[in-house]
Image (tube, rainbow, N blue to C red; front, side, top):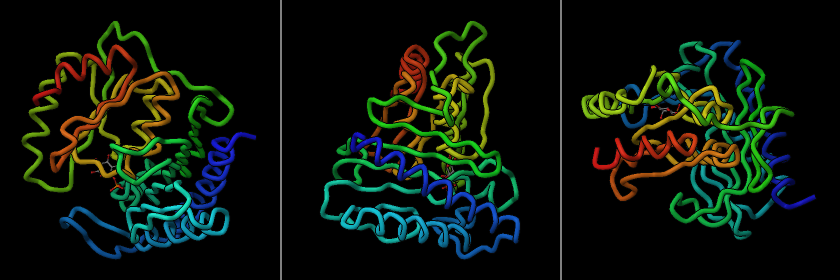
Amino acid sequence: MSADLELVDLAAEIAREAGELARRRRDEGVHLAATKSSLADIVTDADREVEELIRTRLREARPGDGFLGEESDADPGVTGITWVVDPIDGTVNYAYGIPAYCVSIAAVRGSADPQDWDALAAAVFAPAVGELFTASRGGGAWLGERRLSVTTETPAGALLATGFGYDPSTHDGDLATVRRVMTMARDLRRAGSAALDLSYVAAGRLDGYFERGLKPWDFAAGALIVEEAGGAVTRLDVESARPMIVAGGIDVHARLLELLEDS
Ligand code: LIP
């Protein structure tokens, strides 16, 4: 078995276990642990517990690998492989009981800098609906056993998704961006989880996705899943405080770039 397939199998196994823990904790009742960049930027006890489980399982299976997670300290590791983890992506949905949340786990070669890394394997597991999205470099993108492909035609306009940051002062600018891209859209979705939005682009459930201000762990896995489903993913304004991620089938991705560059 190739090394990348071993990585994706490990990511999938851990994502399932971690996702089931998150689902159990949601059913038991969610407790707010802290707020981060703003009152809206929350972390729950489950976020921290799930990330610790993932980190422990990875350490058991691959001691020496690096780790970058949303809720704990980064570790560069010594093997050249770094795991980029969002224990619960869609945290606000999770806290409100909206079943649109997932565990996102990616293995990258190189540092935990999206400009430098080479993504090798990805797993996004949505426990509330029992859907596991996976991809390995060169091995395609999958929903369970079904191979995924992005959409290629949007005769009625593109079904797009986006998201907004936790800082209210950024909302006006982000809404202006939405207004700009609606010229190519049939409609817009805002589901609240970047990893699921990207996985849905790969599955053809969305034609494209764009969002400013994501963290590496929000998109590390989903971006590889889109690319392995025949799509394209670009980060704009990478030196800014809020880089823009753009994803879609080749045509939608290109049209989004035309509208979003200099936005
Ligand atoms: C979330 C992203 C979402 C974005 C939210 C937040 P979290 O990640 O998945 O796309 O709009 O602002 O960043 O905080 O749930 O891990």
